[in-house]
Length: 454
Ligand SMILES: *Cc1c(COP(=O)(O)O)cnc(C)c1O
Image (cartoon, rainbow, N blue to C red; front, side, top):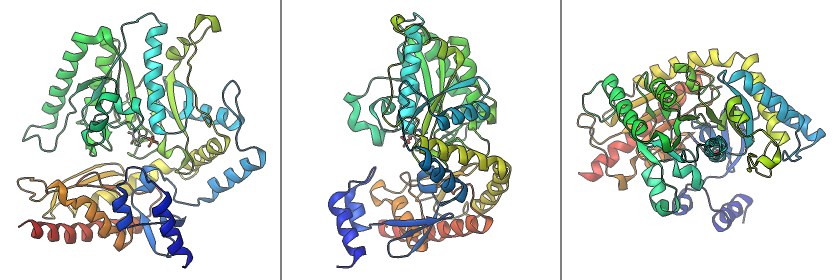
């Protein structure tokens, strides 16, 4: 048996992939061996454009020299020592850097290793903040319909994507669901009216229950895994004002949206919002290593500060938290933003993508295209006049992405929504190439599927 074949067999025999029905993997396996720039190469030597930034992480492409070098340099000093009770050099430097680039009220960095953990930590911090301050009744969280914050039990408890969370219902703690101001499929109502309606409902919840509400958890300007839904202008600002009015902590999840993904360093900057807690992960190391962080204000930090006997300590930590290799990669990653003036560069790419996606708008099977920066969702429908969806069992989104793979681009859909999240470093040519692959794959797949159903 040749080596590729053996690997393939072993992958089917020993691996269990996340968020994957393994039957799908067994039918259409893929094993990546290397990457360079925004291309990935599988064990057979076939190349793919990384149309989903390796699941929304990658920034400067793969094997970026500056980040590779920074990790190698850190390897020569030390790979890991614990952050429990002791600091380390790159963890300190990164925390200082994060203070400079995040909204100005955020000062403290609490590290973890994944987005879900950064959310767990934010929830526990918010909860204990009120306990430490003597507000014992403030124990509940408000969350938005279709919100996604990761897959640990705490994170799914403040999430609301029915498909992922339904089965764990009795395992989750209860949170208070507020409606998301969804524009697509809401009839002809204008976005301002949708916003005002959602804010009014949130006000009602806050007004009647603020004494028991610790915080509200939500994504920033755009919901990711819940379907690439963009909030109408002014909604997030409105939530911030309501939080102030009712003394509720604003916990903003920037795991997907942070680090330039939406055209600003952080999406809260679109509306000049200052969260009390902010979670960051995905792009923080440029897509290299698992580092996440929960950022918070000095006011929240102070509520935990005191003598040990006061029992205010935040009892939470993970073995690899603050890992030196990860922090060194993150520092190198952030230096490139400055050196390459990346946020400004991204503006041109956003415009190129917008122009490209505009051409997909008229396709028979495209119901809606939602784009915020380089975060895009293309919703496929059976009929773009009535917006009638394809039957979910036909898996048009999944089939379309398999076709894209065949044509040389990787992404993963959210149901029948095609996700397009190219690395920020993608060139104009690469962006156009990816959009053209998506167009061809959508046309061919949908035509085929619409035919099957008739
Ligand atoms: C991906 C994501 C998470 C979870 O991050 P992991 O690193 O996968 O645990 C949390 N929140 C949002 C908004 C995300 O997109």
